[in-house]
Amino acid sequence: MAAIEPRRYAPRRQHRSVTARRFLNLRMRDFVYAAVPASNTVRPRAAVTVSVLVATLAVVGCAESEGGDESEDADVVPSMLDCETSMHVVEFADPAVEDNVRFLTGIYDDELLHRDLCAVEAIVVTNRTVTDLSGVQWCTSLKVLRIGDGEVDDVTVLTELTMLETIELASNRVEDASPLAGLTSLKTLDVSSNQLTDLGFATNLTQLRDLRVGSNRITDISSLAEHHELRTLVLASNAIEDLDPLSTTGAVEFLDVRYNDIVDLSPVLDAFAPPRSEDGWKLRIEGKPLSEESCELIGELFRMWIFTDMHC
Image 1 (tube, rainbow, N blue to C red):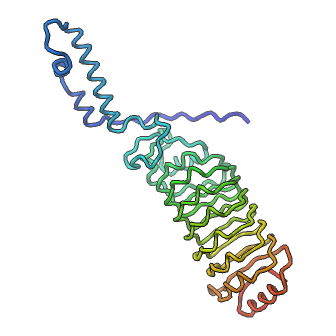
Image 2 (cartoon, rainbow, N blue to C red):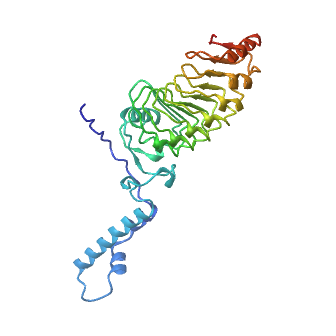
Image 3 (cartoon, helix red, strand yellow):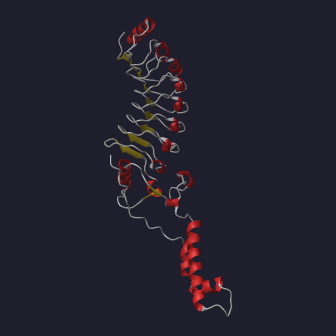
């Protein structure tokens, strides 16, 4: 595959600071008197040369002291800057993500600055293949990120986006979701059809109401034991055997545990017996045969108007 030619955009004009303008308005003789000692041996040409040099250094120094050229600082991170005034030039690694952001901001030709992204609250790309999320970290007000059917394998840049409430990254290539561990405002998380083996990152995401991690390689769900806000939980097509951690949640209304290694449903059936809504709660399970005890419990639930897509 041919390398993607990086895009080129017109640089944004940076306004001179008030201090810099004051220096430029000073008369040349002021610099001569300030920078060159009074002496009959100083020739006019030399004095002018020195004054111009001093003026230049003064203007550059003021500009650097009041922000400098942030775009050249490779180590700068969003938390170091004030989003409302930051002139840091933001570059997105993936053209599909950049196009979405440019559409949202209405900036199509100029460079994108950090301050241009302050109001971006949602990035949605579902009709193009995204491979890299780099640049998204500068959208510090982001609440919704929806990237489906892509090739994203690294979510590290999302670590500081603590305002995120919805992340949908179904059908990507994420193996490590630990960078999401601190995003405690999350209410919806869909990382179905990735390459996850561990749910440990979700331990502190206790505000989650909708969690979808189907079609991964998960075996342990103990990190969900304290998730009392969960209403929808999709665990289908993993390698889960034990549902005991869900016995303390008690609020799930839709549970999908199809195609796992589960034989005993009693932990969740006991916990969720009272219907949580007018339609009751829905259970989906297929694959491995259930224990006789689980089938008996399900029979009782049917009499309580509980709906299920599973048959014994």
